[in-house]
Image (cartoon, rainbow, N blue to C red; front, side):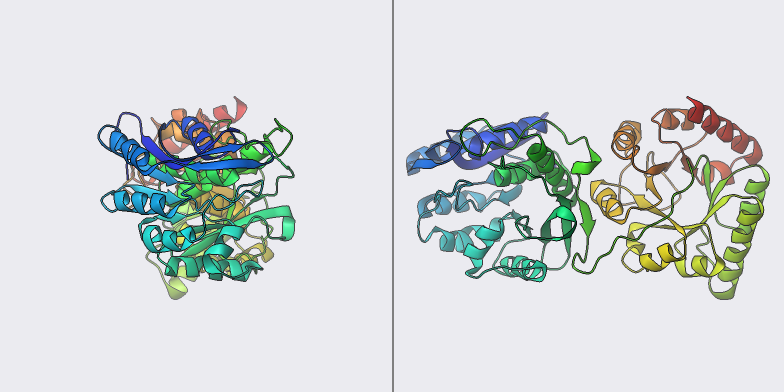
Length: 495
């Protein structure tokens, strides 16, 4: 649900942590970091510190109702995060309110505190499943909580996937099962999301710290904040996991027990962002060769004739995007383009047709997100081809990051007419953020609506390359615009 206020509003319906590390306190700190106004419905007051929960006092029913009514009459939520709902009465009251609520609901089924204290009365989990799960757009249990909900142990990656699917079958619209406690390869921790039809793993760094208080609260409230701001759920999952990884990395011990997750603003380091994979158990990251420096001007053209013309004009990176050819004609066009690339010592990428590109010995292949599932990425890498991947959002960047491609294409930067796009233009400011995040680690190119007038602004971000289609192929004087653009790229590389 998109924000309807000058500043997005998110509610936290949860318990108060007197130690300030979890619950309402962690949620408000998270909302603040994402530029969201936080409102609270306090379900319980806990007497706790960094190592123990001493007492839990549930909020009286009338007080709960008064909090909800006060907010509903004046500060309606764009998204709601549900945390500690420790009694049957609280669960039923919240479920009743949510019957008419149309915004996004994230439910973190808090059952046991990080320090081991019980936060839910006997029998509440059954009521939560019956009354609340059908209204939860996203449930975010950890392994222990999922085991309580399902009444069985969860061991191994396959059982995590099965458990998440079973929780969706119980009524939740989607589930993010945080399986970080599993022992897995590459010193990473893995969460699994599914809506019962689609599913993927989010793999992030294993942060070696004891300061983990409020991890689950922070993750769920970050997702709520991002949904309140209008992000797509998949993007929200990626950014929220990065935020928690950053918070764990920067957490400090404040008392005698585990310290709270740090709340230090929007995640800034690529190392904190997760990689996305569909099949974690069998996935192996191929090793793709580098592009040997910035791509520079990167025309995308439909014919080998265009490839030949551009290479004769001095262009050193070209993509052949032959959409209307099949069979022998397609193979011949690709073979000719590849041969031209060798002749001119240039980088010729083939769009989509990876099998023909391998057969022709191409320099590289470019794939869109929709082709990543069907392409044999290991075969592309084994053949020595470079891989370029299109991205349009945080989820897609995280998916590309999981593949470690030779370059990442970012777009559309401006409105484009070359193809129908489900994504709006990202703009130069977002491109600059991508460059700051990805630039130290990946070769990049920007694409979408870029022409001669817009190119200087795009290149000022440090992206190093503009990919262009109609700005060149439909120009009145293509050679003049190519020479102008090559000059702009050369100046940007020296700057």
